[in-house]
Image 1 (cartoon, one colour):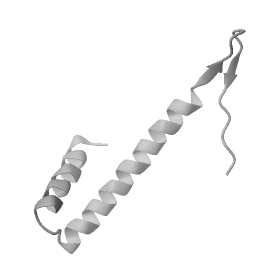
Image 2 (cartoon, one colour):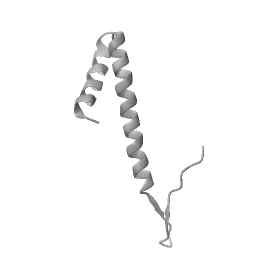
Image 3 (cartoon, one colour):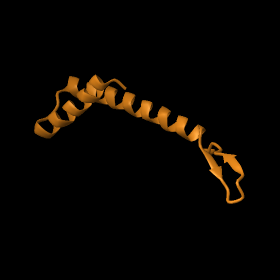
Length: 68
């Protein structure tokens, strides 16, 4: 995520502590938060896809996706 978008999320969070956000600001914050969370999840999935469990006998096993 771009630094400018992260800065804007933080700016809106600070404004929310000072005063109530306008409808446009609330909508912008929701869009930015959803984008941030989606990007975070993609990164976490990439890490987990490249994670292996090593047993005491040295055998490597790739993590399996959890069924819902």
